[in-house]
Each structure stands twice: as structure tokens, then as C-alpha cells.
Length: 421
Image 1 (cartoon, rainbow, N blue to C red):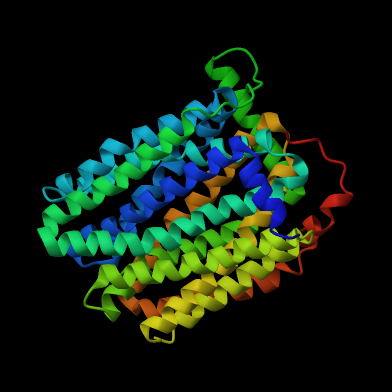
Image 2: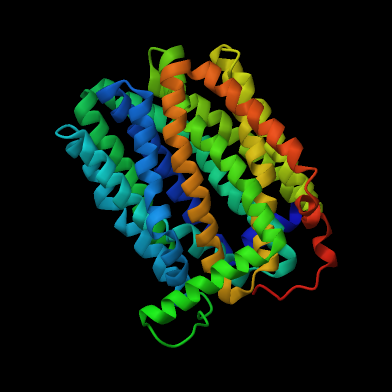
């Protein structure tokens, strides 16, 4: 595929463009939030374990509320869900640097609230894409959607490093972080403004709001996910990537503050590398329109594992940035085809539930891995922990090749599928 078709999709489809721009703006705000959060937590505690607990608190809402989020997305106007999700994050983000100065536990509480609102946004967006994009353009749309997040990484992390580092240098640590989190909150607010004029097709849903009906809808999504061999296998494969990413997140914080006196700048550069690699991966996926989706998932896991393992040899910062770029590239290689697989095999009436259930499972793996990764980093050092995690991911992906259902998605076009939109 040439990039003409994805660009025509972005320019010619106003509803998809609104989703895309909103995602880009919110992602930039989120990256400022992440860098400011890393600076806040590490400056207050100096511990990778505490940083891991902060990431864990961010992921807990997916574990506790994720399945219900899917039911909401399948029953309520998805535009309203996304707008409400953006607006609900503004105040807690503003409170983070203020409350954290008095009690470190308040950071965990606020992160839980922020991400309790955020869990509605992604399944609503992913379920909305097939409603505004023809099925033949889903891979291009998903590549563009991932590209928005990757561009947010490329622009957001350097901006975050400048914003956080500059404001802290200008105003001092306490006041500088207050203003930095204000910039992050502005990103969520602008995202809601972009989505405001968007109109989506009405959601088809069953009547009734009783607990029994909600449970019936939720269990229907669980049954579909468990009984569909392709979805079940792909979910397990993506969980491998989530575990590796989850363990790496707190390690990256400790690594940044180890290699540089300006830890927030180093952390921004490392994440900038991830963003560049992700953009390359998204562009490649958009141009190829590859059909061997199962093989791409496995290749992406191997590439990401190699990048993580490379960080274990304690390279200089610029090499580490290249290696994080490799992990970002691998991440997109398995992420984009995985999303396309779900959209291709899932009926529209179940789309929100399936994405939310997968998010719950993946974030469960992610938050457990956050705690383990921080613990490993404090005991082994970030470099040795990176080497172990990356090597294990490569081995696991190679073993997965021997499982028959792993490559089932390579023959997806041979299936007779219910249209997803």
C-alpha cells in the first residue's frame, strides 16, 4: 500500500480525522503527565519500587472496572463516553503535584481516579473506528491511529522534557511541577473540544438496565473471547508484550536517573526513542497493508525483546535511545495487526466489550509486571533486569511459533466473518 490511501482516509474522512486529532492532542498531554509524574515520584522517593507502585495504581482501574467499561461503551453514545473520559481527568491531574507534597499515598489514589476515567476512552475509540471507516481500510486506520500516539511520543516527550525541566529550573521543583501538570490537563481538555462536534452512528443495544442484563452482556463478551481461538491466542501473545512493557516501565525511570544528572531529560529522550520507533512501525504497517497478521505479531515481540535486552549491556545514552526506538518499532509491529484482528473477527455489537476485556486482561498483566519490574530493578539493577526481561520475551515468542493457532491470523482472509461495522 502507498501512503496515498491512508492520507486520503485522514483528509477525506472528517469523523475519523476528529478521532485522530483528538487522540494526538490527548497523547501529547499524557506524555507531559508521564514525565512530570516520573519526576514527582522519583524526586520524592528515589525508589524504582515506588515508581512501579505508581504505575500499578495507574493500571488497577483496568483490573477492577475494565469489563464494565466495555458494557458502557456498547450501550452509550461513544462520543459522549470519550468526551466524559477526557474531562474527568482534568481535575485529578491538576491535584497530583499539590497532594503529593503532603502524602505520597494521595498520588496513588489520584492515579487510580485518572485512569478509572481513562479506561472508557480507548475501547470507545477503537469501537468507533469501524463505525466510520470501511472494513477494507481498517489496517490503514489502525496504523494512522497508532501513528497519532507515536507522533504524540515524538512531540510530547521532548516537549515534556522541556516543559518539566524548564519549569522546574525557572520556578523550582514544587511550583514547576504544578504548572507542568497544568499543561498535561490542558491536553485532555483540548481533546474533548475536538470531539465535541463529532457524530457517530447510534449504538445498537439491548433494552434494559438491570444488573442481570449487564451481567448477561458482560458474560457474552467473555464467552466470545474464550471460544474464538484466534482472539484467545492473540490475547495471550499480546499479554507477553504487556508483561515485558510493564516490567520495563519502572526500570526506565531508574535507568534515566542513573545515566544522567538531569533524569527527567534522559527519561524524555528514552521515551522519544520509543516514539520514533513507533512512527517507523506505523508508517511501515500503513504502507505494506500486510496480510500475514499472525507472523507480524510474533516478529514484533522478538524485535521488542531484542531492544530491551540491548539495554542490559549498559550502553551510552544515545545508544539506549536507539534501543528504545527498536522496542517502539517492535511494539507497533505486534500492536497494529492485533487490533485489526479483533476488529475483523468481532461483531459490532460486541466490539466495546471485547476491547475492554482485552484491556482488563492486558493491564492485569501490566500492573503485576510493574511491581515485579520495580522490585527487580532495586535488587538487580536496571541493566541486568532489562537483559533478563528482553531475553525471556524473545524465547517466549520463538516457542509460540510451535503452537498451531499462533499463525491462524495469517489466513484471516479465508475466514467467513461477520462484518464489524
